[in-house]
Length: 128
Image (cartoon, rainbow, N blue to C red; front, side):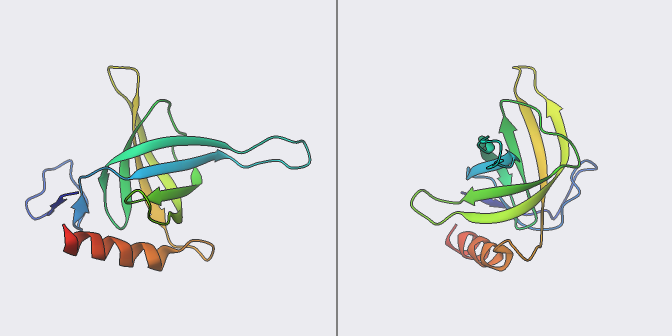
């Protein structure tokens, strides 16, 4: 992964932190499992195209509802433990090839290992 600075940002670039432009494995939980009705959870697997401690940009095969709060699992490298976070879908835009680009903002929550995520990202940036 490579890091890029947000020093000279364009009008469309609003983030203020470093980010990794490499790919990380991302799994969004679109629907929770319903054990009573016997329905399994629905997941959307994707790769990040841009990643920071506070959010990510993904390319997906389907749209994701804007403003949705979703459990997210992120694996920075194969073989590493996944980081379980909560994300808000900030935007979801169609691409010409039929796929979608989706923007996520990671939220701090009691059930997410957010502090471990921050530490893992700091290590990834130092190693990069």
